[in-house]
Amino acid sequence: MEFAHHDKKVCFVISDKRKKEIFISIFSLLKSSSSQIYLTINKITFHIQGMDKSHVCLFDLKLNYDWFDYYEVNKKYELSFDTGTFYSIINTKCEEQGLVFYLEENTTDTLSIEFKNNQNSKNTDYNKFFKLPVLEYDMMK
Image (cartoon, rainbow, N blue to C red; front, side, top):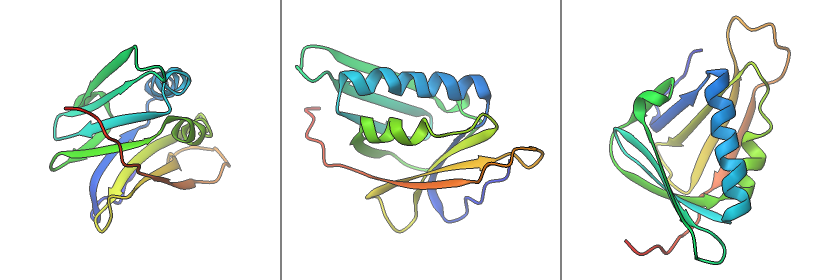
């Protein structure tokens, strides 16, 4: 799968079928626990934190850069977004499509999400493109 990432400041990709299912399952669980998550991404880590809706349970998940099929992050970024919306978007993927996430060079107020068919795929599904608004999230550090 080819990725045009020259105009992206952050880009990470999941094309492995098993990893896509794991990633989607994680957010399926998180959407039922929390309405927002806090995401910190840097050169080596994809780090998710948040609390459940009653503020009793804290969740903390780290994925290293090598878990992804492609991962390019040049500095630290902190994002927050609605888990329900994010899950609704990523759950529309087709089996042979890779998940591509990126922040464009000129903005940090949206996370772009693409579903791209593999070049050798016989899949006739269309590539899909979404922009997820990034929220302000007040989290004690």
